[in-house]
Amino acid sequence: MFGHRRAKTIQFEQADKKRGAALTAFDRIQHVAVTSSNQEQLLEICDTIISGRAVLASFDKVSAAEANYMLSFISGVVYALGGENFKMDNKLFLFGRKEVFDDGSLYQYVEENKA
Image 1 (cartoon, rainbow, N blue to C red):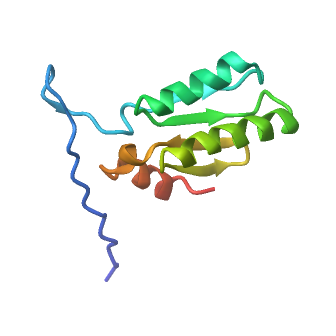
Image 2: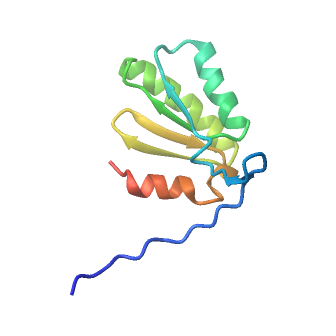
């Protein structure tokens, strides 16, 4: 007999009222390919997190020093909001304020995509 792993049950609380469909934090995630360490892009990422959306940021196109500077800054913003950040891959990170993790969809994404 083959064992079946039970999937975690996650209830999604947020709904898109126009379409009547469930809209999770994962559905609202902002994907960012960081291309430079300029102040404008850094603040854009932070503003997105502050506004209540999670950010999945790829730092493939910048040097290690630039990525470390940006990661430190963004992590400070996330910490101030009581949020969380996850290293998904060598240069791929997920950031979000505390509330975006409440529905469980981002935790599920992290578990399914651990590096």
